[in-house]
Image (cartoon, rainbow, N blue to C red; front, side):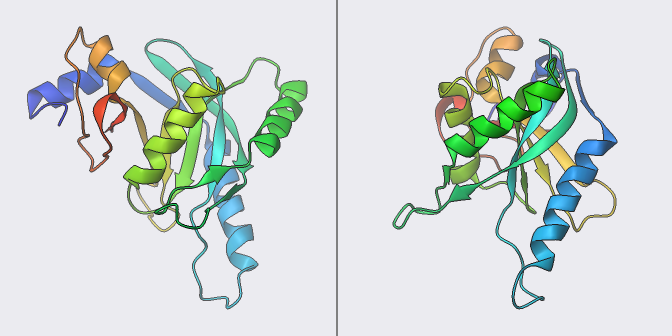
Length: 187
């Protein structure tokens, strides 16, 4: 665990002071979820997790998220729930968005769901960082069924701990997991 009580809140406060999410982003994710759900057979079935990239700007203390786009992925056989992003599709989408939104960068990614999935969430965050898609990717979990707090933003504990002046953590405060420095630090 990164810390307990006041220490956890202190690490989060120093790590990222603000996540600003433009309402359009929530509409885009909701639209993606609705379109996917409408095309499922049988209609009462639930769609698999939906994943996409978040576009915006990022400073050491603030992430502003202005837009998003969906990402394609596959679940390889025997991968214990892990996923493989379609990197070619992601690159094409990124290039397409750069033509109309030149100042926006990929600042992270989102997923739909009710809870964190440590296997997938840590792996996708690591992959985006290691491939240079996003330097310090943030993760937004979007629950399409909640009426109040639909989304939560997370960042890697490595950045949170270093921003707080040291101390390496593992684990997260919101059930995020994985090992080492890549655990989620949540809202």
